[in-house]
Image 1 (cartoon, rainbow, N blue to C red):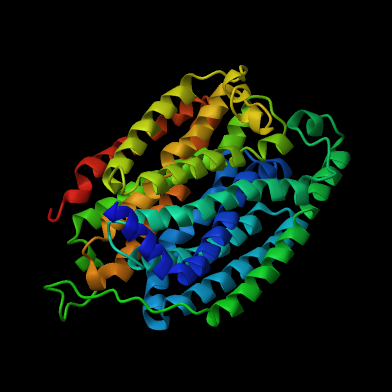
Image 2 (image 1 turned 90 degrees about the horizontal axis):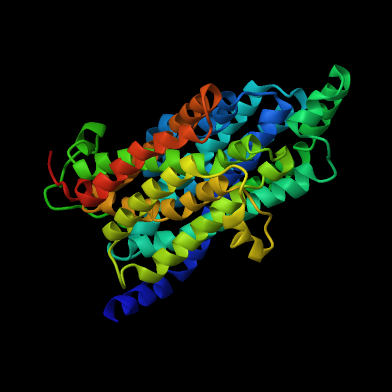
Length: 442
């Protein structure tokens, strides 16, 4: 009862800042999970292999590795609020780059646009995650991140649907078989027509991002005190200094594997849907299925942490479920839809093959990884918090490396069997939950 009262009191005291940061989490959730719809769409209009299509995710997530430390340095100089405004401005700029990419159908320009958007989200993530962790006590940090995650993944449910309405509406005949049946000229015209559908939505996104960047400059966000842990007085914050914290370094590796699997479960689910015979329009909304289960996972986390279980126990359960669901993806049917017929269809959602259903269930397994790893990794960092957050953000590069690796195995073998790469990823997360987060020295 005491812990429940603490949670309610902290949420009440930090209500307005949480609302503002929650809006940010919704925004970068929307932008991030557009990739799930964008990947099969670009695979079609740019005529890409599975490996090439997953480079869409790579260009987006590699920005986190390249830009994390520079963005952390900017935040240290400008403060969290101004850093968030800069992040929103970069997202708006990246959205504008999508316009020439759509008109030219040049895959390289699409990748550049993704990198710019990813750079904007890097500074947003670097600023907002430690901000939420520091808004209250350490033991309730996962609850606050869960609340943010509900907004983030709620946006992930909405984003593919909005994409389908704005981009795919009124366009028919876009399955691979139907496109291949057209003459070369007719096919080019159809692909140009599809690409042109991207212009208006991304122009609107750019305008909204610019408006929000200006608004953030005037948002009533209080400064947070990172504090100085005993023994840190006069210490210069350097990358080498961060290496003294095993729980931080191992936490970044755990995030690397988690984000890689989150992206594969959310963005590559459409590729498995296409392998199962679904057309591009239907496959483009499959990310919403994964996000639905992630939202359920966040609701579960909000309800049980810290009332019924600790953050590390939730992470342990997530890792075990990840291994289990991965094995079921690899052995599930690509024709039988019994599981979704008994569950998702009750919500009015179309049925999907069992193997695809288990990919969506990975969303539930993944949900508690991010909220649990952040507070465990940042515990006791004091003045190292900002740069430590940047190191954790660099772990997001797993979303740049593991998805193309999955795409390579899917191209050269079987899209189901390629999910085997998830097993070592979840095993490392399991290690971090059991031992890694406890390590105070090497």
